[in-house]
Length: 565
Image 1: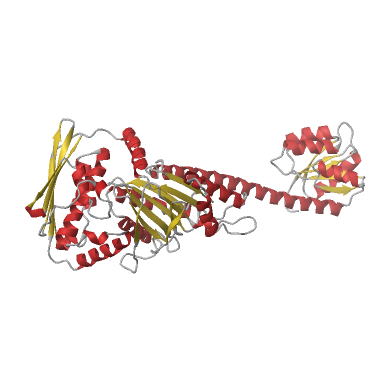
Image 2: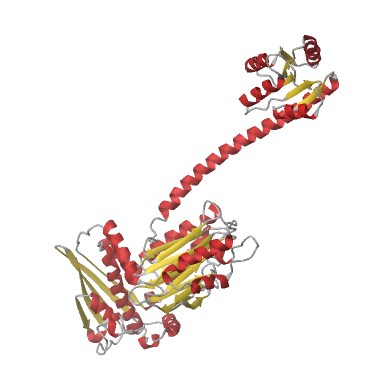
């Protein structure tokens, strides 16, 4: 032994104490003594020895009782106790261990054995102290981690509170493996009064995977508010993730939009499992992924964002989910699987109960077996009226009456600009900044969008609306649009927007002129209910929303008046 220890020797036999004390002092240790267990407790509290050599059979208080009291009152410390005993029966040894003894030395004892036992116990004590320090360091680390997690959670909660998941026609389940989730669910109204939803699944779990959700949310909300198409939103998210995230971290995502006006459902699936469209008791469409997950390919490479469009009504339901559901394992290492998932949807006789039935089936399948991946499930009811009622109730609480202002601006786009610029988000943003219209912003953006689209598609590009006679022909229509835009060398669109304030509102005058030959307004149905087609509804919609519509210059210019209060 190279270090000096303070050792307490407890024995009612004075001769035994003298012999043990001499041996220990010859080994270089400091020694204190006691003649019984009660005295040993008092001296221990005063001297705080490193080790105790304790006799078992003593008057006043035996060694078992004294050891038990000392161990209980110093539970945070490891105080080795060597029992000196002439007893060798099994019951005595068990009693010594139960009272807190760490080793035994039989009387008469051997000096070398005593030294060896002391050395061994001090090595144990040293390991205990190291473990104690490590445990304290771990507790401090865990407290710091918890504090950082709490801060991060508050930041994430505030960042995602813009989501309108509160609407009645959205049901969602988010179950995370770790404290932070690699899955992301966002929902926002569009300027045209529709509903847009993003469900994403980042590689990995926990905070590392959740980091990427913040730029995704920021881009989704800002671009949706400005009226960008879902394809443009996907491209921008992809570019941002490619710039800031490591190569092993990317996001599989679905963005869908329910157009409240035309009852049209648009979907971009970039790497997630099939989106399921449910109607009349069964799955009508499986929308497979046609685009790469976001954040893998840089803009300008082979990246292509492809969308699918479907004509729907208020009874259609859309199911979005991450692979955490179909790849969920039960105790028998079986997968929940796609077939079981579809059966859960189609087995329910009440569409209102489908979502809860899926959760019940999943819970029964897992039977409390720990999940190995984040699980997300979303049900969207394509009920535009219910959605808008929920948003209207929210807007009543959040919106403030706008102050009418007077302003005017104009914009001219030539052929080179028309090929690369979508001015609608910019115009919508300018109008919002100049004149807060509250929930009326949706109607204004719809009018503006229809006027500009009509001028570009029919006035400049000379596209035929009848090409969009079915959902499947939509793709051909937009392919023809892209082809003509790519080869466009002549043409222009002029827009002028003026706002005149009134006592309790205002009057918005929008003038749009294109370089085309104009069109024949006759034959266009004025009421939307008279036209259930996928085309020819834009002008009728404008006339329903505006107080006055004028077709000028043989149909190549349109001026509308929109009044609000």
